[in-house]
Length: 212
Image (cartoon, rainbow, N blue to C red; front, side):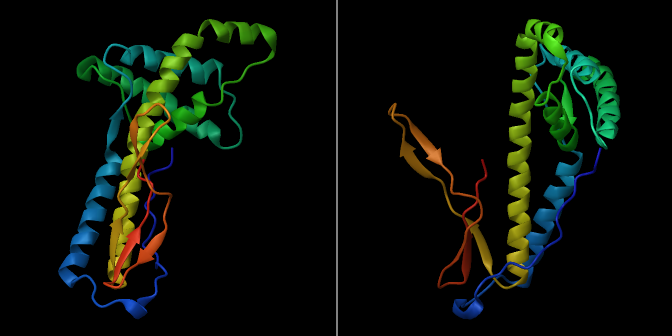
């Protein structure tokens, strides 16, 4: 399974004509360190999938799924082999740690797998119907864990963008979420759409970035 790739720092197109000041060298170094530390930590971090009570059941079902419910194509065979190894290691780990954990890349692949069940004909469809409840638990557990991981990854991407902007002489901020009321009367936070940079008269570049 591919290792976590962190994008190289790229130039961010901004108009420098209105900028009056920018980050100091100390701030730039701080941005670099914060990004690199978070990225390195994320690369080796594992995320809990499901609860302690269903940890071994999720592992067993994923093993069953990649064996009987997933048809790989092209280079996906490597992911299947690696996932089988990850699940075997997780079985051993869960004995001591009581929880099932996966790294980000493994979790992305596992979720891709369960998003694409396959079979041939009516008989296999009827068999899959009988395990649909268990499938739903695994699918939901992976989805929740992956959402958590993806939020962290987006935060790391912002740190990288902030560092890149700092190197060009600009500050970078995240537009705060707004609050809206649903039809049911509930208040919910609405995060801005993905990446829209705005530079104000103080040289601050605001990134409206969806960190959900």
